[in-house]
Image (cartoon, rainbow, N blue to C red; front, side, top):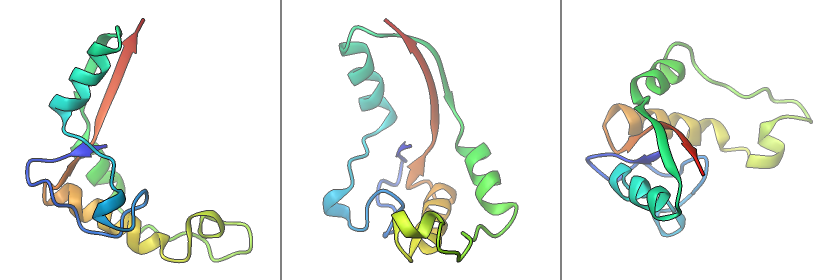
Length: 102
């Protein structure tokens, strides 16, 4: 996940409840960081549309059982996942698949 062209996602998100603790960078910055780490990028694919499809084909709800994602991620995880999907749709976030090698 990277920042999108609009760069102000809807919070809370699965990895950050507030902008102050959001660690994402742009795809350009991500590529530069990977390449400066002496890694060679083999494949770079923007998979934002696939992520949007996965998040919007059905309503994502975590099970409300004792042992579920909400136990670790918090009771607001459904809202945070929904915000990630909305942020992808509105181009505040982008999803990228990267394969790199040393």
